[in-house]
Length: 305
Image: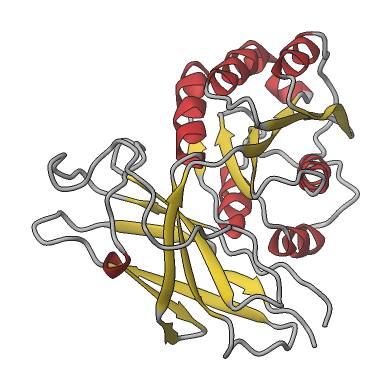
């Protein structure tokens, strides 16, 4: 049987909570065997990586398996594996350098520096910039200085090939051997010059195991619904921001990427039919905690026989 990836990704947002009930610092790894966030069809588990944050977008730890319920096409699944690991991350920076965003290019540099401050020596990075066409300015590397230098020397202007830039980034992510993969897209959401269309973009995101976080800033051509759609389709998150807020938001996103739960349920009853399956998650807060708000990747494509 061909080996297929069944990675599901999702992000959960939390309302304010008491510090004594849920910790905001990393906790020891659980006793259960380590769960890897990648899954092949010859494995026994479907794995669901989850990020949990509070109302201020701070990662929250301390939740247990009983705080989650997972449904696959409406069928409840028993959680048979549970872990929380801080692993290296493969991170692609995908920056809009079209004419409509010239005023925020300095903030993109500050955003990059904030991200790289949180780096792990084992992290992988790359840089894609796009205007009328996308350009892989820095291929996959663990040398963060290369990313910073090349961003400084890259000029902008022209139309906006957002879809092409994101797809180039997702393709580059495939080259990393790390389990955690994500793109940070910084753009106003404009799209007017891509070779790929909306339906092709949707299919490629669904088949990828990379999260897409997008920071959107206002402009005359801003299209925030498009950025939100891309992020939520992948299991990531869209964050609108003023240009001056971009570096702080990027630092919070980087922290989220390093604090994820991984839940697993049996893949034995998942039909290998190549169809899209819908995932629903119910978050059950500990006693006394305010109502919690969840968001996650809504579907995945099952492997074919």
